[in-house]
Length: 311
Image (cartoon, rainbow, N blue to C red; front, top):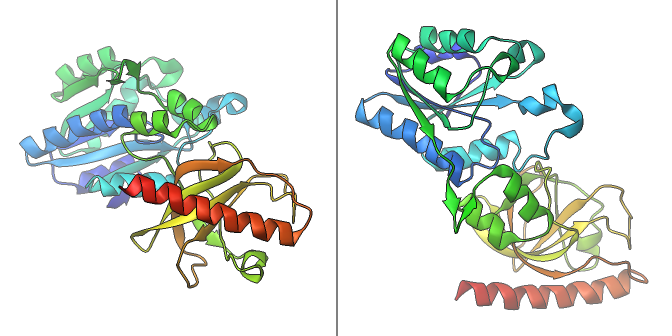
């Protein structure tokens, strides 16, 4: 997938250019509909579909104290989008100057860069530009003026519930993976590189991968049966998401994953981790021996859960 970093780079793509614009945190089912509309337009007109997103999240700039926790970081988002078959992503830097840009000026830049601009697809309630003055109605007017189509995609509902990043954050925060997965359209996962740790797990017979998680919205602390993707393969595992009170008592949550029946080194490689089931809450043990015995029980419990889910 080609990643662009300025609107002007759209000029290098075969037109008509079909844009799907939004923040797309999580790339959930609603986002996928916005993207699908642009992809279909590009396919019908032999053009180029481009997802346009912003980094950082606009609320990080406009209201940093109330900005939401992200469901997926930039690299995870790119992986998810690439796996949909998307060929082009435009990541627009978002600054206070960006926020102050009049809506008409923002669209004019898109029209000037794309050769030509075929369509803009957005969520029906999406707003943009200075003072949030731009909306789907203004886009429609500008489309008629400049000759591009506009798709205002209505909210997507699953079992009566509107799909939104906010609803998914709520589900993840309370460990309701069934709801989160239903709204995402895939299994919720966290993602990040494996960092070298203290190697205590290796010393007690359960080596772990310490994942530097990009995601900001995490489920509750605890021990989980998981599936982890390494080098393209999904491997069974057991994970501790917590503060490691027995050996470290960290202030921040850390994720340690023990891959079942796997040996090797994975430092600096990316690991994507799906939470299959919550096994128990994190707690402090009397020492390493008691911790080791409990991990053995956790591994056995994870094997049972993952085997049942595989049927």
